[in-house]
Structure formats: C-alpha cells, structure tokens
Length: 276
Image (tube, rainbow, N blue to C red; front, side, top):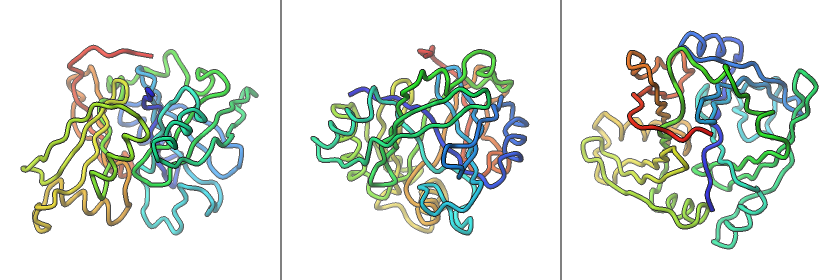
C-alpha cells in the first residue's frame, strides 16, 4: 500500500514568535485557525511538493492530547509526522492483518476563518517511532493551500529526508514493514557517525530510521551522542529534517534558535522532483 509524507509537526509555546522566526528564515508562513476542540491553533509552511510543516501551539492545558507537554519539559521542537493514505480505515485494516495495531479512524476537523469547514480522519499508532495517518474527507486543497503561498524566499521546495530516532532499529523497521507492506530498505552502519540506519521511500521523500550503533562508545561526541540525548530527553520520533532548495546560497543548517529546536538543514536540489 503506497503511503507518502503529508506533513511534519513542530510544537511550540509561542505561535506568534515562531511565525516571525520562520519568516526571518525565508519561509512563507500561513496563519491557520483554532482546531475544533479549542486546544490548539496553528500555522502552516506549505512546499511546492505538497508536503508541509505545521507549527502548533496549545491554547489551554490539554493532558488528553498526544502532543501535550506538561510543564514544557521537552520544550519546543518536532513532535510528530503524518502519512497520507487513500483511506485511514483501509490502511489500518491492512496493518492489522500484518500484526500492527493502529487506533482509528477518528474524525477531525476545523472551520477556516472564511467559514469553510474542513473534515478529515486520523489513525493513531501505538508507538512513538511510527507516524499517524491523516486523510481528507473534504478536498485537500482546502487544507493545504496552493499558489504563491508555496513560494519561499529561501528557495525551499520540499522535504528530501526525514530522520527518525529509534531505540531498536530492527524492531522499528519491522513495524514499518507491517505498516507499509512490501518495501525496499537500504540498511547500513555509519561507523564515522556511530549510528545504524535503515532508509526507505515515502514517495519522493526518504525516511531514515537511525539509532546509536551497539558498538558506538558512549563517550564520543557526534551523531550517536546527539541521538542518545534526543532519545533520553524526547523519546523516539523525528530527529532531523532535510529540505531541498534551488537557491544554492541558502544551503546550510538552520539556526536552532529560530527553528525552535527543530533540527533542519537545507540542501541543494540535485534531481527533478514529482510535484503534487
């Protein structure tokens, strides 16, 4: 069953400040709305490839919410990502047949400022290394704007790679096989970084699962140490995102103070992409 990346979620404390910071980095940021439960409001950064980043902040205490961070212990940063299935129910049923439990479908929605109502369904995973599922019941263009809002001064056009920190690479890979079905996987140990990785395709985006290699010394700084700190402080989930840009002068890691602790790097676009 073919699934592609839909969007990436960054949870923040101050949405207005975050909008200003990402605008300073050269992104076109759209103000969103308050969600139907009144717990959160958001803003979106939509790319030419159809993926987007959601900046989300809480408006009230919401301990029932999967992204709630009581006392702001973990702080701002990546909290989740969503895949886009044809139907949530069909994807959940197929995953269950392969031994993977997902909760749902659950109804969701919000009313835009112009009065247009958006409706969708979601599926929730049982473990933090997996994405949630997100499928529109109303036209996707109502949720994900088209046109000039997809142009960014920094030249970013989409998501090249998404790296997910996991505790047990083999266990996480087995769960992804159950979710996605027959997939091609490239596995490797990056000795110079002290990490083990497994890469697979989500449409035009590469998903990379990464964990510290078993023989990586805990005392050595580098990617392995960063992964360990991430797993200790935030648990499994998105570790880094790589975006591709056609503006060569924009290629660089982005300042974490402006990305609100989201590890984002811009790289040069070296190949044509299928835009949807």
